Length: 281
Image (cartoon, rainbow, N blue to C red; front, side, top):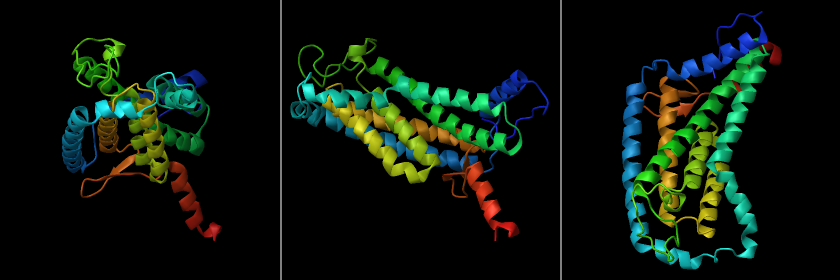
């Protein structure tokens, strides 16, 4: 969301809300302006290429050498004690995650429209970061749905047996939407996006993502190669969205070597200024 939208101070609440929402969309599509964006683009291309190559190689190895045997290590489908796993796995469901993030974005806009000055700036700064998280997950899920349709891999036991080579491209049904795993895509896109903004949360977020990945295997909803591919798609797409924001000076800075780092949040910057002021000593 925009950090400093141009809004008449005495405009009505609907006008304020319209300006906040319009500014939030406008900042995302404005022309990139960062002078180091070319270096960042090269970094993104290089990292995406080697991640994709390494990930694709690992996916092929898992399909050939491990997917079928891994199923034998998992509990039988319908096992009674798996009910907590069925609850936990929903924390990686794309519809739920996107709904929560979208609700938070709407709430930020509704509240920010009624605020002014510093309080609005602080809230809209958080809203910009929330936009990044939402779009990272949304793009990842969109790409994953296209790949699922094109690849058409059957889920474990579709067709009556654990066949890792059950592919029917362009089949278009849920039974053949196994690769990549949408839960893994969502969890790793969310984990990367949150960690990119708030690095101190990195360990907790990737533990969350790995737990979601394991639930898909334990419930026999996916093969190991499916969740590996999902993690790859989520991370690469979140990296691409991070570049988009950094090139427009939204939430991220680009260093001289092309690496992208999170900007301090508005609240953190304000607290630092207060701490350094003479009156704070």
